[in-house]
Image (cartoon, rainbow, N blue to C red):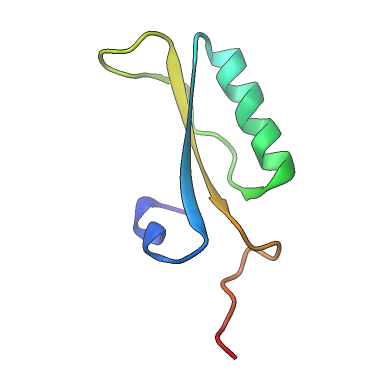
Length: 70
């Protein structure tokens, strides 16, 4: 899933900021346990901010596939 997919309803990009990589990654995996979501990106520094961030993409539908209009 990439940013280009964010034009589809039900998709979101989630960024987790934390003081350290372990905290950011742990929280990101907790999100994936409860949502249809990708795993987190590699932890990376955010210019001008303390700590690190990870990014993941989530889909609100349980199947991971867009619903079709019926």
